[in-house]
Image (tube, rainbow, N blue to C red; front, side):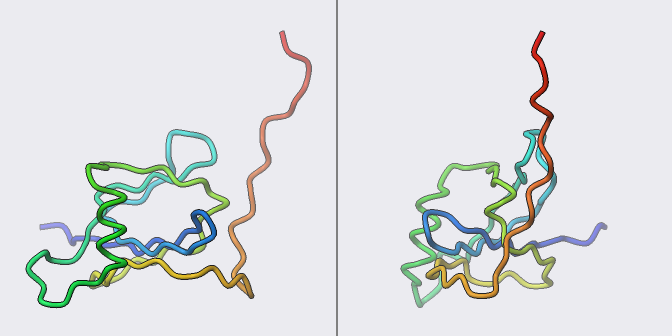
Length: 110
């Protein structure tokens, strides 16, 4: 039986830092995008309900796969246990996003 992978993906969206957990993270087929599949959230039977996690669940409800622009990704970690998805304020500071790869040259078009 293959080991189950869980990835913690942190990215910036509309001035906030999102932290979500996913089963699969790959370089997307769209140039400059990261493909994130199998978003996972905490158990619904939990006694304590986190409003931030509920907001993320509602935002990604029905989403099988999402594409994140590379420049918005802050960090990707492979973790042993799933944590709580959350949204926090973007402080800036010493967090630097991945550099953008060079794009196709804008030469003459035929």
